[in-house]
Image (cartoon, rainbow over all chains, first blue to last red):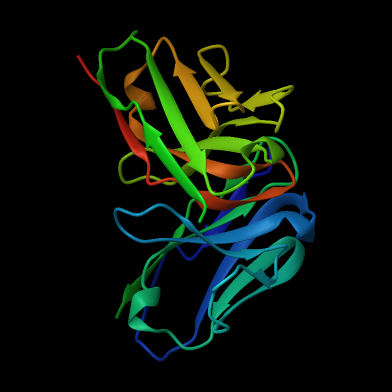
Length: 108
Length: 118
């Protein structure tokens, strides 16, 4: 099983700042099958990024993804108030499909 | 518009059974792999089970293997999760999602809460 470790666990930033979230895999993940999701309280996860760097439909361009093999990054260029949420990475290329434990992005 | 609507959650005693349903609309259901993902209170996401578009292959998390069964009825555009021998640790919100191995989880339902308690 591929274990995904996200860091930091909690990130405290102010609106307008840049946010950088990390996802490290226990073994190489095909970039084609690395995704990021955003989840707000009481809501289902929302797909942000797939294929490591492709934004899903309707996702603002302040969200970007990068990385390869075992190290992946989600960057939010300038935080808006609605961006404060929990973010999960996921690999969906090798069974079993696994998620990281999440990074909580909170307002400083 | 793609919609996934789960139902069937509720309170069940340990050792009991429950069947969840997910009604799909707005897309060609038979063309997509589907999955169930759960989230225990205050915890992260765990993929529970996945089924291919024609139901010919399934896969499960080790934590539910032998107790849960995923299935689908493409004529009714509905995904199911039969949950037997339920344990306290199965308490979670259960989401159905469009996606599976090599297919992004691009649409999710709103979730249904399953509580396993005496």
